[in-house]
Image (cartoon, helix red, strand yellow):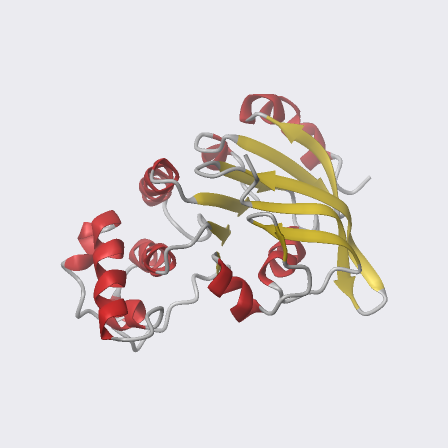
Length: 234
């Protein structure tokens, strides 16, 4: 089966300095990939490369078998790659319904987007007229997920889903991640803190100094994780 998204030997960075060095990632339909690493490991640059915000200096990025290296962020979104940035990226003065309208081209598309989002997140249907800025951090993250799902993506990249949220809320959000994967959506979860995400991932990689230093099942990666984090400054 053709992977939904691939990074093949990707190097990328800023100006003359590469931050990523030969990154190889592959994600199948309906699976969850955890990308882990301490601060400065290259996680944010990986997100930016996938999102089309940083152009690779080497290698390829493929989406559903098609080479999209160097494609624009909006082109990637139309092709089925949705990125939820660190900080959620919701608009405080827009309602839940208005957020879903952003991903639709017309009234019919808006109806489909709402139906798709509320099927996965029925709690938001009860808050459809509420301003995002008046919602809790967990609810805003749920809204960001719902907006991503409303666009019928092939893959969703989430940067630091757990940031600033209580453990119980994080657990509930990861239950939603499991549900989305079961529905056939592929997800890449970029996280600094590994404990919760390894419980939902099918595969995990650890970044260190812009390189993948460990790859395997969550159990295999968890066994060596402390060593990689403690060695980050060596």
